[in-house]
Amino acid sequence: MEIRRSTRNDLAAMNEIYAFARRFMAAHGNPNQWGPTGWPPEALLRQDIAAGNSYVCVEDGRVVGTFFFRQGADAEPTYRDITDGSWLDESPYGVLHRVASDGTVKGVGRFCMDWAYARCGHLRADTHGDNLVMQSLLQKCGFVRCGIVHVAEDSYPRLAYEKVREHKTILRCPVCGGALDFRGKAMRCPAGHAFDLAREGYVNLLRSTRSGDRMGDSKESARSRRDFLSKGYYRPLRDALCDIFAGQRGTVLDICCGEGYYTAALGENPALRVYGFDLSKEMIRLAARRGGATYFVANLAAIPVADGSVDAATQIFAPFHEPEFARVLRSGGRLYSVTPGSRHLWALKERLYDAPYPNDEALPAVKLLRCVGRRKISAVITLESPEDIETVFRMTPYYYHTSQRDRDKLNALASLRTEIEFIIAEYEKP
Image (cartoon, rainbow, N blue to C red; front, side):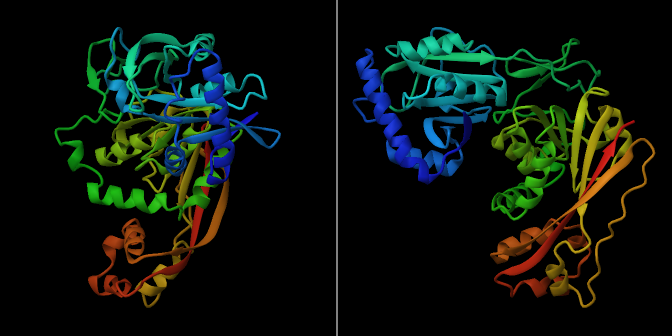
């Protein structure tokens, strides 16, 4: 069996699966959970598909199961209120809803739960008091019953379950250097220093008298970048990075991760435990909403991560701080550094300058790491609006060195077809 995201082409199969599930529940003493309302409605399934939170389980090319899965600090808002008990852990979690199969293949429910748990290590779910089959499955999969919650679909109380993987983080206290672990709604070190988790699930480990809101990118800049990347213009780079990590395992650190576009994609690999940080609190706030990683606010010059704790790191359009990279990487660990290729956004430069110049593809000189390979990723994209053209221009280093007269040349463009080109250099720590 395999899991993939649902598409609209799966709707007919999903509706049939849920119809079978309603009949099965009614025949096994649970007529009230989905039966009276015909839950879930197709409109909700379409909404979940559009949001990327709907998944199907496939066996021999046939859809045999389906479920909802989402990660984040507040992945299920109705779980904020729990009675007759409490949650085991307040760290960011994944939530599993509407698990169902067509009854033709054994083990679909457990396979879906194991898949979801492998992606987050902290999973919550709920079920109806009459759903003895699901209660048994949750317990067999290692979930603990925590209390009672109420959901939006009806007035029946739900039994709340949680499964948490005990783990130690690679994060270190920025005050004393002690190990940081999740404890309740904060991260704490043995010396008692505490750092509260934000509502989105990230933690601010920046030691500065200046607010993280006033450091790094502005809210407007961060949201423009998020919206631009979410349109898939740089998907060739994202896919190339995912391909690189497809056969790898271990801890990955995304250095200066921005709003998490690449970080979250890497986090979909269940063999990876991904961390991402940035100087900008707004960038990390947006990244945490994407999920897929442990996010924190920090400074590149003093990364609050244990020495030798990282198996691989990514550094995408960020300053190259070799001493810190070498410190956090284990021996044999890899760094994947992404820089623009010589003809990256060439058509944009042609519009801006009378004599455009290619980007320098020379790699930085290194002493603590050694370069073991490089590859070039190229594609052609069409920027489809003036806003997208302006956003990608602001993402370049030459935006701030371009005169207003030259900037104005872009104002008349409704769209722009241009090359994109990236160099991925691979370094190893001896």
